[in-house]
Image (cartoon, rainbow over the protein chains, first blue to last red):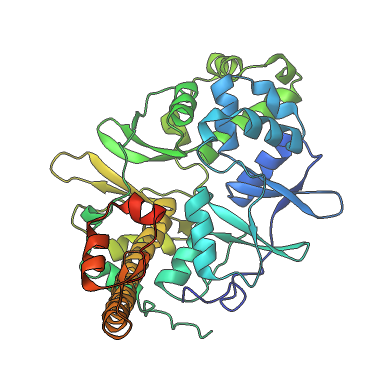
Length: 153
Length: 251
C-alpha cells in the first residue's frame, strides 16, 4: 500500500476549490465556509497554482491584531502572514508543497508529516489536478479504498 | 497496484495497531480547553497563542463541542460583510474593535460558535479504547461530517486527557513505520559490517602469516619489515617514529 501511487488509488484527480491571487481575502474565507473547507489553492489568472491559503493563516492576523489585513488581496495576505509569522519558523515556510499523480503514498505521508500541512495539492506537470487531504490518506492506509464521498479539501 | 477491499485493513497496519489502545498514542500535548462563556476575541487569542486549530468547549460542566479556527473565521467573515454593507467595516482596523462593536450590538460567547461549520463533531472515546477504532473514526465520515479530532474523556473525572487528530495520526503512522524500517536496516547493516570486517580481518592475518613464513618478512602495522627474527624483534621494539624515519635494514 505504501508504494502505491496516488493515481493508482484514485486520489490524484478531484475538483479543487481555488481562489485567484488577486481576489479579495474575504472571498477566500467565504469560499472556505461555503464549501466547509479549511484551505484553498491560490491560482494565477491563467490557472497555475501559486500557493495555498488556510484558516490557520488567520492566527497570525490575530497575533499582531491587524484586522485590516482582510482588506488585502489573497496573495498579499498570504505573503504578509508567512513572512512575519515567527510561530511557524520551525515548520514549513515553503509557499507551496505539491505532489504529482505518480507520487507514492509513502512520500505523501512523509511530506505531510514533515511539513505539518493538512493537505497537499496534486500537480500534473503544470496543471493543478487534485488535492490529497489527511482524511484521504488515513482512509487509504486504514481501509484501503477511495472514500465514497471524496471532498475537495 | 491492486486496491484493498473495503473492510480489510491493508497488511502492515494491522500488525502496527494490533492490541494498541488509544493510551499508547504518543503524540500528545497538554489539552487546552475553554469555558463556553469566553468571549470570541479571547477564544481567537487562545488558538493563536497556542498555535492550535481547535479547542474543546465546556459549558455548564458539559462538553458541548469543538470551536475550530474555521468556525471563527466563518463567523468573523460574516460579521465583517454585514458591517461592510453598513459601510462601517473600514473603521475596524483591529479584531478587537470589530468584536467590541459586535458585542455592543449583540454579545456572543464562544459557545455560540461551536461547530457552526458542521465539520468538527465532538465524538469522545474512553481511555483504553482501541487505537484502530479511533483512527478509523478519523478516516471515515460520521453522519456526513468529517471527524478531525477524537477527544479521550476520562469517565471518572470528566476531563479530556488527550486529543487524537488527523494530523497526529498521520505522523504516528509515518513514524512507527519508519522506526520499524530503521531498526530492520540497522540490523542488516550491523551483520554486513560484522561479516566484512571478519572476512577482511581474517584475510589480513592470513596474509601476514603467509608472508612471514614464506619471504622471511613481517607486516608490522603499516610497515613491511624484512630481516632475521632478531631484526624483526628489534623493529617491533623500535618506537613508531623511528621505524618511519629509518626503514628496516636488510638482513
